[in-house]
Length: 166
Image (cartoon, rainbow, N blue to C red; front, side, top):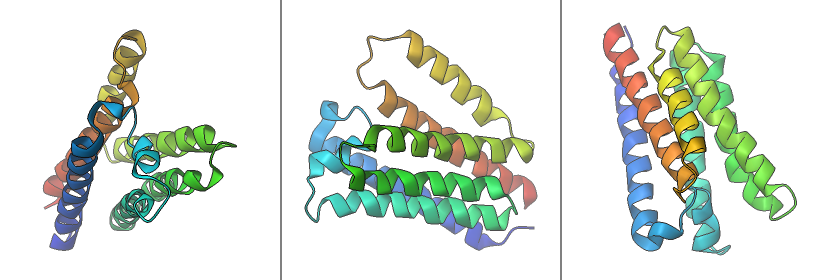
């Protein structure tokens, strides 16, 4: 049986994610082709710290789940979020590569961790979504859409795992 703190932590993760998405969507709308782009649109001043804080929250949430479910995959997922937040320091040199590597690690390692727990929905949905978004090139915000799909299926499966074990 997993304690209630895990449920509260995952609810907090949903609140932080939705709050950040609602704020940046309200501020920038169609200018966002990825969540990471919000850092640059917010500016490199103190406002950019909001993006880094958002990434840090993902790091902590994923690593907490790694501890609860005894899964190193969630630790690596959290490390991917840390790379996304750190990539803003590289400016133009490695930013794109570090962003994509970090975001890919965040999503892929969480999905793998869930698969090892017997939950395959995220792997299936994420693979299908990726194929569809790669084929439909007319959508300008494909990465942004994929990031939101990834969050929904991963957090959804974390809730499924929690309720199955309680």
